[in-house]
Amino acid sequence: MRASQTVKPQLAAADFGVAEDWTRFVQAGQVVGDVRRFGRRRRLELAANARTLRLIAPLSGAAVVVVDGGVRHIAAGAALILNRPQAVECLWSAGASGVLLRVPVGLVQRAVPAVFAEPRRLAPVDHVVRLDGEGARLGAALAELRDLAAAEGAPEPAGLDLRLGEAVVRALKGEAPDDCFPVSRSLMRAVDHLRAHPESRCSAEALAGIAGVTLPTLQRNVRTCLDMSLARFVERERLGWVRDRLRSAEECRSIARLAEAVGYRTATTLARNYQRLFGETPTQTRARAFAPRGR
Image (cartoon, rainbow, N blue to C red; front, side):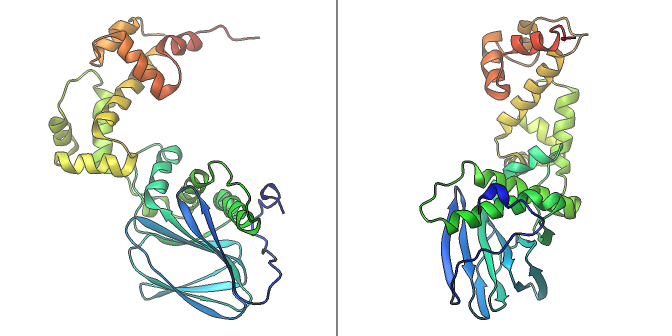
């Protein structure tokens, strides 16, 4: 069965044609794990750490996961997402099959800006998510991984780990966005200041003071939430302001004057950094914004 045929509310069970236990390693970029079939009832202990998220998704049958003294029941059509640095115990029913993955927390965190319009960080989570609705993309990514494991020697689908990381974010957002992805208040204060005063020349230390935290804390929050340095974050916000000005009919300053306004010595330097971030030059942005629209 091809992956394009498996985007369903429930993942169909893979028929591996064996009654005994069956395990196949699977990898997609930074995501690694196993696709397993359990010929009889099995108990597994899964290790965890602060840098790795655990994802357990039955393809058929059911599993019971014991974590932090609580019990989670999951069956086909659902997945358990765990982001807690502790070992868990997983009990599988006889004849069950499933996908067990280790997903880098950083891979998931990097997908957060594409889903949320504000800086948020992945919290310690313990959620069972459905693989339909907001979880449909996760179901599709898991189906691709299952098919990859079933077809030995098949090439890895391009960008599957990135799609899976974003799918995890969207599935958790559909469950409890504020619990799973709390807003970074200090980072929001920094964003608000930079957007309100893009022409200011405040130092990194001053920006941290405006955010209400120490400089190391602000640097850590930027790295955690946005996967970038503080300097790159400030540059991105200022270039975003330039882009907004270039699209505004009320802005009459030249590109050189806008470059000077946000601290670039030359328009050439601005254009180079702007194109690297947005994929087009400032001139192209302005021309596209005011090009005559076709009838």
